[in-house]
Image (cartoon, rainbow, N blue to C red):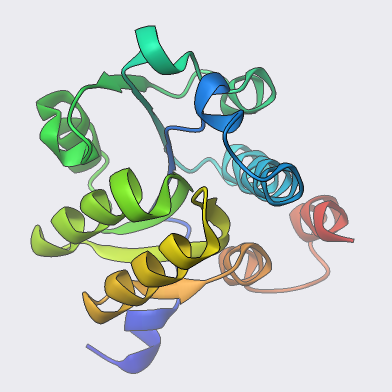
Length: 188
């Protein structure tokens, strides 16, 4: 496998994943960081819809943590949502079956909390052979230190660290197209 194949996303081989961005969990987060996270995940959700990429959403213990934020749920449209009790999304047989059913190997990961559910999911996805692209400006924890530690651990596990704009422009590949004109406005 070439370096390019390891680091570049291909829209026909990628899945966007939104992990546990839930109402009651969001209350515990830094407001400014949360605002950026929601904006960036929104950009990726709109892009995935336009590029006809699969989206998978998870929710941890909905009874205690509430549902996915309404603005993200709306942008996710008809994307399947998997309720789970395990911290790793891979602990849900329905979720892992849905990932495999896409036939895609690249997983673009967003969500919270970085050092718990995101970390455990990324390690298990890597262990299962998936290429994981960790969108650092679209994952968060209550503390910056926990976020930093988890991002470092996931990078050591082979996740590709990236950011919202890098993901978007890798998926677009070229400028000048109608889809480029539409989606590039999201990051201006």
